[in-house]
Length: 289
Image (cartoon, rainbow, N blue to C red):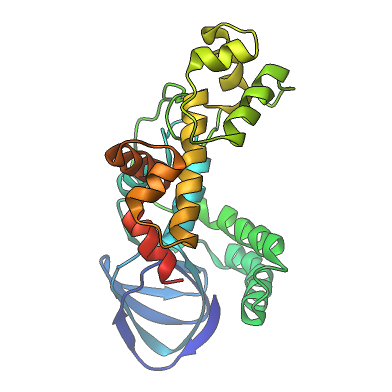
């Protein structure tokens, strides 16, 4: 995030992130997918990732630009619509459908943009100071305050939404929790799975360990953790496989077997469904960090 004043034409340029440009002073002509449009105090420019845009100041223009990582925005979108999106991967298609205009000029008005100024200034200062870890919560609070003012002005495409069937058995983030005291049987089975993720537990074996029927155990465990025992164990295996890919040089097939899968294709499919990346992509990404 940064403040800047422009006196000369800039661009066109594109970024691998979402940009929110708040006009603080002066005026300019912005050209992008919407054509050429004038902007001045009271306007906010929203640009999607990989969208070309250029600026021709009319004398000078001062702006504050917020850069938003696309993965971060998708995570927020998923949790905002967690009651209708099946999993995080659904958020990608949902975003493309709902936010079909990747370049927009939002006319908030001088008063509303004025409301943003103190938050923008503090957020810029914290960004310049590099206080991302120590002031993380404050920076998130400032961003959400800004987003709360801007969001109603963002153009969206109408889409019929309806709650999806509860995805207990899939590798989704548990989102339909009841937040009630957990039964002892659920915590005991969780501990069994955590202690030995590679072990091929059957539902019958786990149910016998806690003196429940398989059907009862599946219901009790899902109510507690939002996943069936099998899906929960798969998430544990994916976490262990990811650790091995990050911290060791073990071949991908060996990492999958060490995590508990006999089938390489099953390990590949489960890992990608849970993380959004193939094991090879995950290892490559880890090596570049």
